[in-house]
Length: 121
Image 1: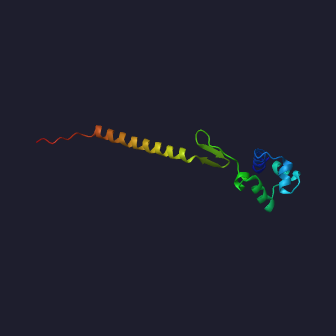
Image 2: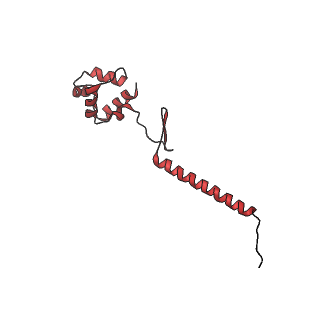
Image 3: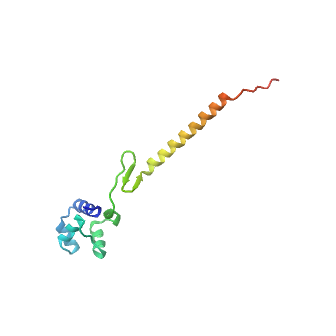
C-alpha cells in the first residue's frame, strides 16, 4: 500500500465507513475505493475534492504520512526531519547557557593566571 491508500483506509475506518458506504457517497463502485486503498489507482479531480469533503480532511491528511513527535521531539519523515518547535527552542536555550558557562569559565581561568598588579601608595 502507499501513503494515500493507508491514510484513506485509516480515516475511512475512523469515520466508521465501509468501502461500500464511502463509494455510495461518492457515487462510484466500491472496487474503485478498494483500488485507491491498495495503491493501484487514485482519485482525480471532482471525485478527489468530494472525497475530501465527505471525510472532512485536507489533501495533506491523505497525501502525507501522519507523524507524531517522539519523546525526543524529533521525527524522521522520509528525507525530512521534523523537530518540535518547543524542543528546538529548549535545546537552543540550553546551548546558549552552555556557551555562556564556557565563556565564564574562560574568564575565571584568565583571572587566575593574570598577574596581580597592586599599586602601592
